[in-house]
Length: 322
Figure (cartoon, rainbow, N blue to C red):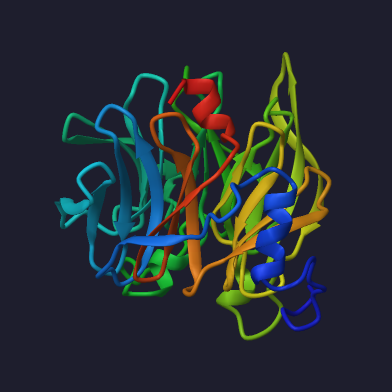
């Protein structure tokens, strides 16, 4: 493995010039800058637009609570507390929210305030601490399972890996069983499909946990679907951000990858070319697109939530119509 220090970075640091590059590329309006809309969080994560409520739901993992920001009211409230360190979440086609629980070591579904497990075990053991999740157009749930919730008591409960790895899993809608799709990463973290779901992008943030020997890049895998099932092949490094680790990622309708980093949100083409970046004054953990017409970017960054007007929509918003 390469160390974090020796990993080449793709693109310059986020600053005024990289922000201007996104304006020139037609991705954000001229004059748009990120504005902090929610504060008082210990570590902000897992934002998801809830169209029925017109809110952004996100996690404060060390605070063990889920928050909701209402942009129309300009207010943020506690959605639920004592939530067992939930992290990433996404909206399912039926409106339910699929979310990752570090503390319960499972992927679960929340609907109308009720929470139920979706999948809890693989190969006779519990997962490590499911981190981020996406739902494919066929209804299958894909999620990453790094060890953060079992190695950091601020994010879960200390424990051991019970299957001996850190995988990316797919949960078939019919069987309800989890099957490992990617097993060659250090700490798989954020994930997002290309618009046609032929490629899965996954971030590896193991450099943030390991003193040496870790990675801080996004890898891309071809998703192959046959009569025999689904598999991921051809893993290759797509990009490495200039600073920090690429935690959460999103893909817009043109296939561009919007990635978190220590200094903001960096944007890359589908083939890994750096297009520009949005500077944010705090370390960015994750992001999501939302708003009434899908042209609002919400950025979960350390102590709160930021908003940025954009000119593109992401694949989830386009597919689900908000």
